[in-house]
Length: 328
Image 1 (tube, rainbow, N blue to C red):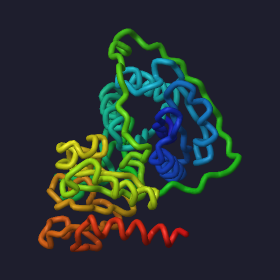
Image 2: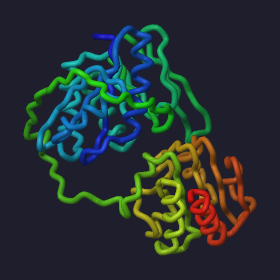
Image 3: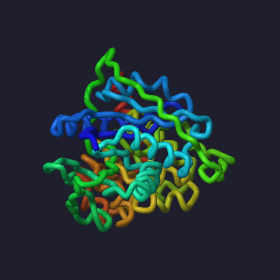
């Protein structure tokens, strides 16, 4: 086993998830402590064109697995592909973004490789050969620290925005290694019939440094237009509470919460969301939280950095208008 740190670079249709760049920066810092280097893994179809972007964020060696069967994520073929890369790279640690894909993939690879595994980490550091991680527990009520033994492969998924990506280095290059993989009929038995669109071209909630979320108080899909307008002017993502998604106001792909997606943006704006414990578990790690709600006693105000007891239908359009003026 080498002292190198391998990052699974998550890409969707040729677009690299920002969390992957954050992990490449983290991998470089951890590898410097072990005398190793940061390496990366790209899996998909036609991903060779992404290697320059990955190298710019510090990867010294990039392993690629390319196959038409890997164009879209499926658990079995991606597990086989990542395991093949791990066999080729023999890393000390594998870092994976905490996304739906990352959670699924990490657990399967961890079981297949009999690795020490931690999911949804917010802090990762080394103590000798061991990897020491911190992660939230019990719906975010407290954080716990765990030690992953250095005697076996260590795999950790890291929450988006827990670390900041460094500045890319223009013209950086990295050694590339093509890894071949033979996918069995068992790997490819699951077929994809349809890919659900996230809608409107707005970035996914797990990708945004800023997230603007709406709750059941919006009362309709049409009313969410004011949420999208504010998110657009902030270059942010649109989220929604479970109640809003269950009511059909937004797709469940935008649901923030314990049963949806966990987000940790720099700024989270909750509009008309009371703050059920399941929702708080999905966003309480945000750096700054702004709550807009007419109910002064709403639980969301207990975790908010700034609270506005106001009608969202009045305040949100005013915020959007003011921000547009400030941006010229």
